Length: 348
Ligand code: AN7
Image 1 (cartoon, helix red, strand yellow):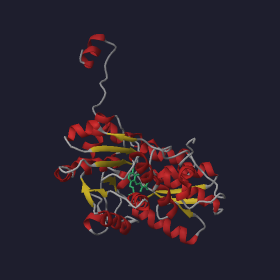
Image 2 (tube, rainbow, N blue to C red):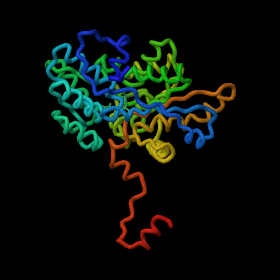
Image 3 (tube, rainbow, N blue to C red):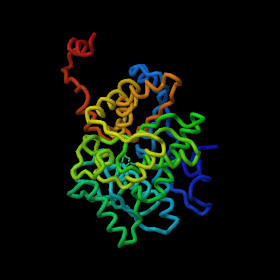
């Protein structure tokens, strides 16, 4: 079968009918890559796989949910959609809305979203409102607007978003032939951990769900909302997640954990992925691998009896946040057209 996106592939398991117009950019079907170099680096007796969601059409996992949300919005004759966003939802909503011919407005926290995401939302013709406030303020305002005006909410509170995103768990089960033992995932607004758990439980299987928040933006771990969340991983700079309770449910039912990783740990994992595996992700995405590194000893001690299979979701592409990449790596050398100096710089 020719691949035509997640709705075509998983129609039977999604709330669509033959009448649903499918708005797709052929999202999904993303690589599940074995990470042998990281296994070796960590000296861990497990198989580690990376689900690289940066390979989606707009560069993040949001496209899986957005193809569903926008298709259903068109089916319901909606004319306009709106979301609050730390960037990736905005980029995805703007792209799919453009393809569907819908109006799109996005409210983003001013100064707190990565450049790639902002450029996407702008290019796809969304009305971009940069709010003087944070993501939580933006979401509150968007919810107020959608209560009063006929705009379709395309944040993950829209249940079709979760339905679309659960297909990532289906792909993992299809690829491995079963569910992994552990699944590491970044947690922001907590829609994705909710969606994966829904996908796994629909197959009556499931790994331990291991969710990670940035330590400066960790309301679920702290047990209360964080007023001024702080982290370099702007995608998950969220102080009051919409799917808080469902994330806790995923954690508890799967006997997993939701814990923190520091910005330093995130940057370390971000660099490891790029330098050891050739996979460029945005900082928030590296929270899953940072979490795996944090829990390595716990897993190794349990892995004595059996060899575990571990999946880490890498939620978004590194090109989303070029500023952070350039700040995190060795700067290029500026050199005259002088062969001797150039050879020296190369190390010859
Ligand atoms: C790269 O775009 O919330 O826990 O508004 O962009 O489902 O929120 C983005 C979230 C992880 C967290 N990694 O997922 C938004 C937004 C990346 C992200 C998350 C986000 P959720």
